[in-house]
Length: 268
Figure 1 (cartoon, one colour):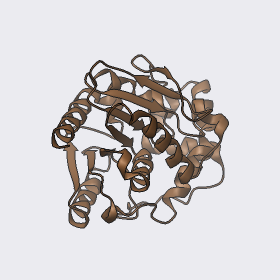
Figure 2 (figure 1 turned 60 degrees about the vertical axis):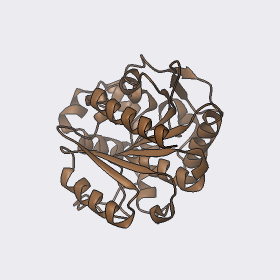
Figure 3 (figure 1 turned 90 degrees about the vertical axis):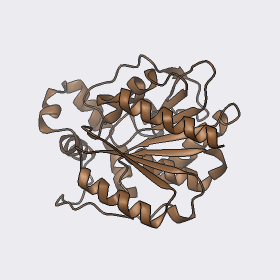
Figure 4 (figure 1 turned 30 degrees about the horizontal axis):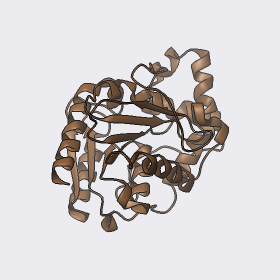
Protein backbone atom coordinates (compact mmCIF):
# COMPACT_ATOMS: atom_id res chain seq x y z
CA UNK A 1 0.00 0.00 0.00
CA UNK A 2 1.07 3.60 -0.35
CA UNK A 3 0.39 6.72 1.71
CA UNK A 4 -0.73 9.00 -1.12
CA UNK A 5 -2.14 8.66 -4.61
CA UNK A 6 0.80 7.60 -6.80
CA UNK A 7 1.90 9.44 -9.87
CA UNK A 8 1.04 7.38 -12.93
CA UNK A 9 4.00 8.79 -14.89
CA UNK A 10 5.75 5.71 -16.23
CA UNK A 11 2.55 3.69 -16.44
CA UNK A 12 -0.18 4.41 -18.95
CA UNK A 13 -3.61 2.85 -19.37
CA UNK A 14 -3.45 -0.34 -21.40
CA UNK A 15 -5.85 -2.82 -22.95
CA UNK A 16 -7.31 -5.34 -20.56
CA UNK A 17 -7.98 -9.01 -21.31
CA UNK A 18 -10.63 -8.93 -18.55
CA UNK A 19 -13.58 -6.53 -18.97
CA UNK A 20 -13.69 -4.03 -16.12
CA UNK A 21 -10.12 -4.68 -14.95
CA UNK A 22 -7.98 -1.51 -14.97
CA UNK A 23 -4.61 -2.32 -16.55
CA UNK A 24 -1.52 -0.11 -16.88
CA UNK A 25 1.71 -0.67 -18.77
CA UNK A 26 5.20 0.64 -19.46
CA UNK A 27 6.85 -0.66 -22.63
CA UNK A 28 10.51 -0.56 -23.65
CA UNK A 29 12.42 -1.52 -26.78
CA UNK A 30 14.08 -4.94 -26.93
CA UNK A 31 12.43 -6.09 -23.71
CA UNK A 32 13.97 -9.11 -21.99
CA UNK A 33 10.70 -10.10 -20.35
CA UNK A 34 7.35 -8.83 -19.16
CA UNK A 35 7.07 -8.10 -15.44
CA UNK A 36 3.48 -8.37 -14.25
CA UNK A 37 3.07 -6.56 -10.92
CA UNK A 38 0.37 -7.61 -8.44
CA UNK A 39 -0.34 -5.18 -5.62
CA UNK A 40 -1.10 -5.96 -2.00
CA UNK A 41 -3.93 -5.04 0.32
CA UNK A 42 -5.25 -1.47 0.16
CA UNK A 43 -2.88 -0.65 -2.69
CA UNK A 44 -3.30 0.03 -6.43
CA UNK A 45 -1.55 -0.82 -9.65
CA UNK A 46 -0.35 2.75 -10.05
CA UNK A 47 1.91 2.38 -7.03
CA UNK A 48 4.38 0.51 -9.27
CA UNK A 49 4.97 3.63 -11.40
CA UNK A 50 8.25 4.54 -9.71
CA UNK A 51 9.53 0.99 -10.09
CA UNK A 52 8.48 0.81 -13.75
CA UNK A 53 10.49 3.93 -14.62
CA UNK A 54 13.65 2.25 -13.35
CA UNK A 55 13.25 -0.98 -15.31
CA UNK A 56 14.90 -0.04 -18.59
CA UNK A 57 15.09 -3.51 -20.11
CA UNK A 58 11.74 -4.96 -19.05
CA UNK A 59 8.13 -4.31 -20.03
CA UNK A 60 5.94 -3.70 -17.00
CA UNK A 61 2.23 -4.45 -16.69
CA UNK A 62 0.31 -3.58 -13.52
CA UNK A 63 -3.36 -3.55 -12.70
CA UNK A 64 -5.89 -2.72 -10.02
CA UNK A 65 -7.07 -5.99 -8.53
CA UNK A 66 -10.81 -6.60 -8.38
CA UNK A 67 -12.52 -4.35 -5.85
CA UNK A 68 -9.71 -1.80 -5.82
CA UNK A 69 -9.81 1.68 -7.34
CA UNK A 70 -10.22 1.36 -11.12
CA UNK A 71 -11.53 -2.19 -10.83
CA UNK A 72 -14.06 -1.57 -8.03
CA UNK A 73 -16.97 -2.22 -10.36
CA UNK A 74 -15.97 -5.91 -10.39
CA UNK A 75 -16.46 -6.10 -6.63
CA UNK A 76 -14.46 -8.03 -4.01
CA UNK A 77 -12.94 -11.21 -5.38
CA UNK A 78 -12.28 -14.77 -4.40
CA UNK A 79 -8.70 -15.99 -4.75
CA UNK A 80 -9.82 -18.08 -7.72
CA UNK A 81 -11.02 -14.92 -9.49
CA UNK A 82 -7.79 -13.07 -8.68
CA UNK A 83 -5.75 -15.95 -10.07
CA UNK A 84 -7.93 -16.01 -13.18
CA UNK A 85 -7.23 -12.33 -13.84
CA UNK A 86 -3.47 -12.77 -13.44
CA UNK A 87 -3.46 -15.85 -15.66
CA UNK A 88 -5.40 -13.97 -18.35
CA UNK A 89 -2.84 -11.15 -18.36
CA UNK A 90 0.10 -13.56 -18.31
CA UNK A 91 -1.35 -15.66 -21.14
CA UNK A 92 -1.67 -12.58 -23.34
CA UNK A 93 1.87 -11.36 -22.56
CA UNK A 94 3.51 -14.78 -22.90
CA UNK A 95 3.02 -14.72 -26.67
CA UNK A 96 5.77 -12.08 -26.99
CA UNK A 97 8.22 -12.59 -24.12
CA UNK A 98 8.87 -14.59 -20.95
CA UNK A 99 6.57 -13.56 -18.10
CA UNK A 100 7.88 -12.81 -14.63
CA UNK A 101 5.39 -11.99 -11.89
CA UNK A 102 6.21 -9.63 -9.02
CA UNK A 103 3.83 -9.88 -6.08
CA UNK A 104 4.00 -7.28 -3.32
CA UNK A 105 2.62 -8.37 0.07
CA UNK A 106 -0.74 -10.15 -0.52
CA UNK A 107 -0.07 -9.85 -4.24
CA UNK A 108 2.57 -12.54 -3.74
CA UNK A 109 -0.10 -14.96 -2.55
CA UNK A 110 -1.97 -14.38 -5.81
CA UNK A 111 1.27 -14.80 -7.78
CA UNK A 112 2.15 -18.12 -6.12
CA UNK A 113 -1.38 -19.47 -6.56
CA UNK A 114 -1.32 -18.54 -10.25
CA UNK A 115 2.09 -20.15 -10.81
CA UNK A 116 0.87 -23.28 -9.06
CA UNK A 117 -2.15 -23.43 -11.37
CA UNK A 118 -0.40 -22.52 -14.65
CA UNK A 119 3.34 -23.15 -14.20
CA UNK A 120 4.10 -23.00 -17.91
CA UNK A 121 3.05 -19.33 -18.07
CA UNK A 122 5.60 -17.98 -15.60
CA UNK A 123 9.38 -18.17 -15.84
CA UNK A 124 9.94 -16.67 -12.38
CA UNK A 125 7.96 -15.56 -9.32
CA UNK A 126 9.39 -12.68 -7.28
CA UNK A 127 7.78 -11.84 -3.95
CA UNK A 128 8.30 -8.88 -1.67
CA UNK A 129 7.36 -9.45 1.97
CA UNK A 130 4.45 -11.69 1.10
CA UNK A 131 2.70 -13.10 4.17
CA UNK A 132 2.69 -16.88 4.12
CA UNK A 133 0.91 -17.83 7.36
CA UNK A 134 0.59 -21.43 6.20
CA UNK A 135 4.38 -21.71 6.49
CA UNK A 136 5.05 -19.26 9.33
CA UNK A 137 2.36 -17.31 11.14
CA UNK A 138 3.12 -13.87 12.47
CA UNK A 139 2.92 -13.32 16.19
CA UNK A 140 0.21 -10.71 16.61
CA UNK A 141 -2.12 -9.45 19.27
CA UNK A 142 -4.47 -7.97 16.70
CA UNK A 143 -8.18 -8.75 17.13
CA UNK A 144 -9.98 -10.73 14.47
CA UNK A 145 -11.17 -8.54 11.56
CA UNK A 146 -14.72 -7.25 11.80
CA UNK A 147 -17.22 -7.09 8.96
CA UNK A 148 -16.95 -3.28 8.84
CA UNK A 149 -14.97 -2.46 5.68
CA UNK A 150 -14.57 1.23 6.54
CA UNK A 151 -13.11 0.47 9.95
CA UNK A 152 -10.86 -2.32 8.69
CA UNK A 153 -9.48 -0.13 5.91
CA UNK A 154 -8.53 2.60 8.38
CA UNK A 155 -7.09 0.18 10.94
CA UNK A 156 -5.08 -1.63 8.26
CA UNK A 157 -3.67 1.63 6.92
CA UNK A 158 -2.75 2.86 10.38
CA UNK A 159 -1.12 -0.47 11.25
CA UNK A 160 0.95 -0.83 8.07
CA UNK A 161 1.77 2.83 7.41
CA UNK A 162 1.28 4.73 10.69
CA UNK A 163 -1.29 6.85 12.47
CA UNK A 164 0.51 9.95 11.24
CA UNK A 165 0.26 8.79 7.61
CA UNK A 166 -3.50 8.35 7.95
CA UNK A 167 -3.86 11.79 9.49
CA UNK A 168 -1.98 13.34 6.55
CA UNK A 169 -4.44 11.94 4.01
CA UNK A 170 -7.06 14.25 2.56
CA UNK A 171 -10.65 13.35 3.29
CA UNK A 172 -11.10 12.32 -0.35
CA UNK A 173 -8.15 9.93 -0.10
CA UNK A 174 -9.45 8.51 3.18
CA UNK A 175 -12.78 7.88 1.52
CA UNK A 176 -11.03 6.20 -1.40
CA UNK A 177 -9.32 3.83 1.04
CA UNK A 178 -12.63 3.08 2.73
CA UNK A 179 -14.13 2.22 -0.66
CA UNK A 180 -11.36 -0.38 -0.99
CA UNK A 181 -12.40 -1.88 2.37
CA UNK A 182 -14.61 -4.68 0.97
CA UNK A 183 -11.73 -5.90 -1.23
CA UNK A 184 -9.39 -5.76 1.75
CA UNK A 185 -11.78 -7.92 3.78
CA UNK A 186 -11.77 -10.47 0.95
CA UNK A 187 -7.95 -10.50 1.01
CA UNK A 188 -7.90 -11.04 4.77
CA UNK A 189 -10.38 -13.92 4.43
CA UNK A 190 -7.95 -15.71 2.08
CA UNK A 191 -5.22 -15.37 4.68
CA UNK A 192 -7.40 -17.11 7.26
CA UNK A 193 -8.32 -19.97 4.93
CA UNK A 194 -6.49 -23.16 3.92
CA UNK A 195 -3.19 -23.04 2.06
CA UNK A 196 -3.97 -22.10 -1.57
CA UNK A 197 -0.81 -23.67 -3.03
CA UNK A 198 1.78 -26.32 -2.31
CA UNK A 199 5.25 -24.78 -2.51
CA UNK A 200 6.89 -28.20 -2.47
CA UNK A 201 5.07 -29.14 -5.67
CA UNK A 202 5.83 -25.95 -7.59
CA UNK A 203 8.20 -26.07 -10.55
CA UNK A 204 8.53 -22.31 -11.14
CA UNK A 205 11.56 -20.69 -9.46
CA UNK A 206 10.61 -18.42 -6.55
CA UNK A 207 12.55 -15.55 -4.97
CA UNK A 208 11.46 -13.86 -1.75
CA UNK A 209 12.81 -10.34 -1.15
CA UNK A 210 12.34 -8.64 2.20
CA UNK A 211 13.55 -5.58 4.04
CA UNK A 212 15.04 -5.25 7.48
CA UNK A 213 12.72 -2.55 8.82
CA UNK A 214 9.20 -4.03 8.63
CA UNK A 215 8.96 -7.36 10.46
CA UNK A 216 12.57 -8.04 9.51
CA UNK A 217 13.02 -10.83 12.05
CA UNK A 218 9.81 -12.52 10.92
CA UNK A 219 10.98 -12.60 7.31
CA UNK A 220 14.43 -13.87 8.27
CA UNK A 221 12.75 -16.77 10.06
CA UNK A 222 10.41 -17.31 7.12
CA UNK A 223 13.41 -17.31 4.77
CA UNK A 224 15.04 -20.06 6.81
CA UNK A 225 11.88 -22.16 6.68
CA UNK A 226 11.51 -21.66 2.93
CA UNK A 227 15.11 -22.72 2.36
CA UNK A 228 14.60 -25.88 4.37
CA UNK A 229 11.24 -26.88 2.93
CA UNK A 230 11.92 -25.99 -0.70
CA UNK A 231 15.53 -25.28 -1.83
CA UNK A 232 14.34 -23.54 -5.02
CA UNK A 233 13.10 -20.56 -2.96
CA UNK A 234 15.89 -17.99 -2.91
CA UNK A 235 15.77 -15.16 -0.40
CA UNK A 236 17.27 -11.67 -0.57
CA UNK A 237 17.34 -9.11 2.23
CA UNK A 238 17.40 -5.40 1.41
CA UNK A 239 19.06 -3.26 4.05
CA UNK A 240 17.41 -0.05 5.26
CA UNK A 241 14.16 -1.04 3.58
CA UNK A 242 10.56 -1.09 4.78
CA UNK A 243 7.42 -2.73 3.44
CA UNK A 244 6.76 -0.21 0.66
CA UNK A 245 10.05 -0.75 -1.15
CA UNK A 246 8.48 -0.21 -4.59
CA UNK A 247 7.74 3.36 -3.45
CA UNK A 248 10.54 4.21 -1.03
CA UNK A 249 13.45 2.40 -2.75
CA UNK A 250 12.40 1.73 -6.35
CA UNK A 251 15.96 2.10 -7.65
CA UNK A 252 17.63 -0.62 -5.53
CA UNK A 253 14.56 -2.86 -5.87
CA UNK A 254 14.61 -2.37 -9.63
CA UNK A 255 18.29 -3.35 -9.76
CA UNK A 256 17.56 -6.59 -7.90
CA UNK A 257 14.60 -7.43 -10.12
CA UNK A 258 16.59 -6.70 -13.29
CA UNK A 259 19.45 -8.91 -12.13
CA UNK A 260 17.07 -11.76 -11.30
CA UNK A 261 15.40 -11.52 -14.70
CA UNK A 262 18.75 -11.42 -16.51
CA UNK A 263 19.90 -14.50 -14.60
CA UNK A 264 16.67 -16.33 -15.38
CA UNK A 265 16.83 -15.44 -19.08
CA UNK A 266 20.45 -16.59 -19.26
CA UNK A 267 19.61 -19.95 -17.71
CA UNK A 268 16.52 -20.59 -19.82
